[in-house]
Length: 474
Image (cartoon, rainbow, N blue to C red; front, top):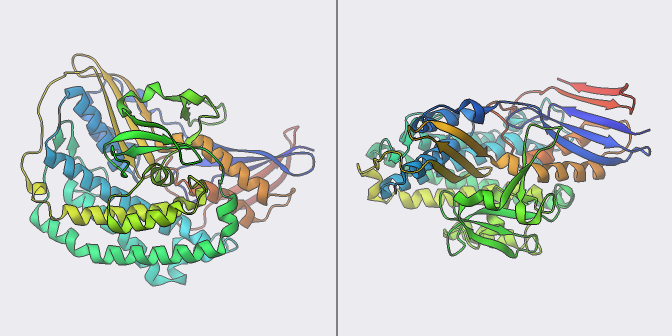
């Protein structure tokens, strides 16, 4: 008899979601779905607000990646004003985005994902978290926390606070980098580099013992999208869009991100509040693409800094063409942390970060503005339409997690088909299915399930709707 298994909620992700696993009459997995069960309506309730308020409003979408929304929103405001911001403002925005990448990637690697592949899939859920990591390796856990703190410190030094800084504005930024802040960042860099080296060593060891995970955790062909410079160098706050396929071939390049609607369309599934963007020239589902660290490293030809470039060469050897295993998102995050540290180091020697020429001033020169920036989880689009008074008439936000939605569904199904058999499913097997989602580090809301024993309920439901079996924890 056909059956359905529900994992609700999915744990150690930022937000609330559930997974449904469908079994056929033989007890084998026929399909699986990832459902986002939150509804927030952020785009709709922004209508009627002045566009100038959006950099202060949209970071409230998330407490983990507020800087990403802050910067994309400010860039949309730049476009409405039709201005080029001062060079110092651009460099300062870039510095804050680098801090955002460091803190978010460190959180994902050390807090949300490492407990699985460092402590083991069979570790009890009450221990398989950051506290369990502290108990097993106190120095490593502390170093991971400190690495995240370093990224947050950069954000606070520039914006005055670690979360929701009111700093970037349409036309530029509010303040420059003070000398004491520059000195503090510079003094912390050696420790951050040392922690990142340790993380690389640990993950390389994990790869030797997790060959099956590399093979089955979201390993399938897809397109990849990210921003790059004209020469193909990795980009995080400018450049143009590039799409590559699973063979590593470029299928579209130097696309103007402001014209995203010409090549990105969005589909809707009735079982999730999360929309599913796809590359429109190929249609859905053939136009499924991935964004974020794995995608950015697949579309980039070089990172632009020596140590990260060396790691990128190793990374690209892990695939035939593109690197297609979603388990290697973890490796890609470490490479991006390294690239960010190297770029922060370079910026610390740039005197322009102390400039007071920080803002361009103008009125409403365009009734539409699109701001695009790379968030830690992938490319982020803020699209605002305003009236002549600068009041918002339409808002469209395309976030990274949505762009990965089709791929996350395929990842869950692939892992479930490999590990789930029959009605009685051990918890470690379910955790593997959940980890397929953690590979993408989805950001669904401001909440995060990162510590402690998280509640989990798995229900087995027959075709007539009757409850056949339930597994609960927490």
